[in-house]
Image (cartoon, rainbow, N blue to C red; front, top):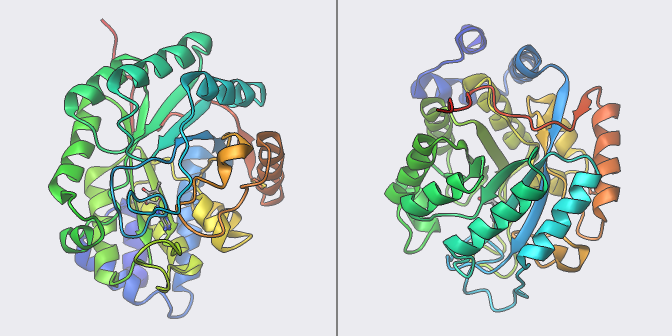
Amino acid sequence: MRELLDKLYETNALTKEEIIEVLRHLDEGENKKLLFDYAHRTRLAHYGPRVFMRGLVEFSNYCKQDCMYCGIRASNRNADRYRLTPEEILECCKEGYELDYRTFVLQSGEDYWYTEERLMEILHLIKSTYPDVAVTLSIGERSRATYEKLYAAGADRFLLRHETASRELYESLHPKMSFDNRMECLRILKEIGYQVGAGFMVGLPGQTLEHLAEDLDFLHRFQPDMIGIGPFIPHNDTPLKGSKGGRVEATLVMVAMARLLVPKANLPATTAMGSLDPQGRERAIKAGANVVMPNLSPTSVREKYALYENKICTGDEAAHCRNCIEMRIKVSGFDVDMGRGDSLNWTEPSVG
Ligand code: 5AD
Ligand code: FES
């Protein structure tokens, strides 16, 4: 077991069977401590003590999909829906820019009210006002043609969590969605030239250690630029209300494993981690995470973007979160980096 951890640290590679072996024996002796230590050292080797800040704009909670776990699923009649106009989105970015953010993450449900044209308009608006920022989209599945046009319009990065790499589990949680299409979208995004983010939830109902090993093995094979990992937190207006939910400790293990299997990835300490444990984000940073994504959405809509219960920061102004997070990062012994924070896995496509 110690040999496997050493191999993981030295080569950043394990087979799926070896990953399972590691996960099975983490509770013995000092194994878990060693895993976190190796993850931390790997993060230091590539990114030093820096933590990148991304400003998150949750611009619409309309969604055509019906994911069993998600609070903004189409059939949740209790969700109070909203959409931000292009001008309102730009206003959030303005506030963020003045707080020194140089990356904005535009996230929404799968909302086709934002047509290709509208999304392009939003991207042009942001990029012409702030040419020095990186824009990340997190808007779900679209066609290859749309992904291409959005990239041409200035989108730099795209987050599309794979959610779970187990086809069976995926299909049980995503009515009418296709596992193959999800994976195809990720491949297309990478091919176009985006910095691509994948990721998954920990503690989904029916999820086993083998499923989690499949997620890690998928990440290792796909080598995404960004990896979002968070605990599943049940939402009361979903079919999974009352189920158990993920644990912070298990999620930290996945963050550390992801750091070691995809050493150069940008790995956020997710809001879900901070929502489950007041120290969750700090603990994730110490387990290998190097990104945080404080909220820039208008406070008037914050509570409405409720994917899960008890989400943090719903009442806090952007400036407050900016300071709060900075303090937390410093107290944990890390440094804030307000730069674009491009992935080290990705190299800018050459021009001309
Ligand atoms: N608990 C935790 N994470 C969730 N997400 C959606 N619903 C929940 C939930 N109930 C995650 C999904 C999605 C990301 C934006 O939020 O992984 O990709
Ligand atoms: Fe929002 Fe701490 S990050 S209040």
